[in-house]
Length: 113
Length: 113
Image 1 (tube, rainbow over the protein chains, first blue to last red):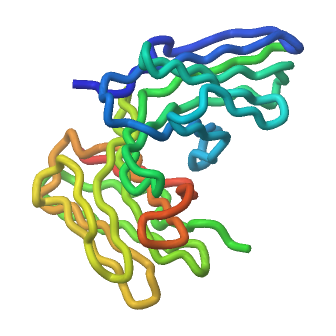
Image 2: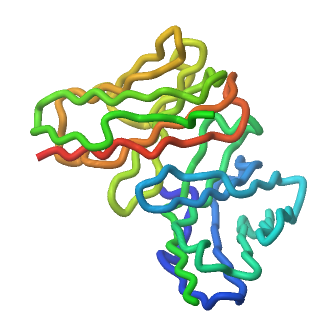
């Protein structure tokens, strides 16, 4: 049973527009959520996180929204840039130490000029 | 500062053989994690080591094992290789005690023929 789901395998967006990547989870014990970005032939790199006591966290062009009642989070990238083209993974953890992360399958974002 | 380094980059084995993958964490990090990314799947948690001890284990058979050395580097061993073990194996490190955002290496691609 997949506890973290990213139902869109891919997303195409034009440069300058907003990219919205979605993630759903089923385990109500998850309290901490992270987004990682992965370029080909590189390891995933941490992007942004949010805890369940908040519903929004912002870092520059990246904002993560959490709707705990719907068990849904989303990552907004505004404005999107071609360099944002990568695979984005949503991850969830029960503890603030992130010692055991549960990842989604990822969404490949393609930002075209 | 050097990041998380993994070796080898690629490894080809035949069914039934053993594979050994190696990981050097970021200097000062004492926690090392291993994840498997099989084709079409998200990252699956394998093992977590901290201060030389196995702290947690994912839902994988005992043929997946590892260890952490006094210098905090780590080794992942996969015995009696099966075709479905073909995957990208990612190592990550964090400052320690399972605390802190994970920093990933670029991974080792294992192919089992």
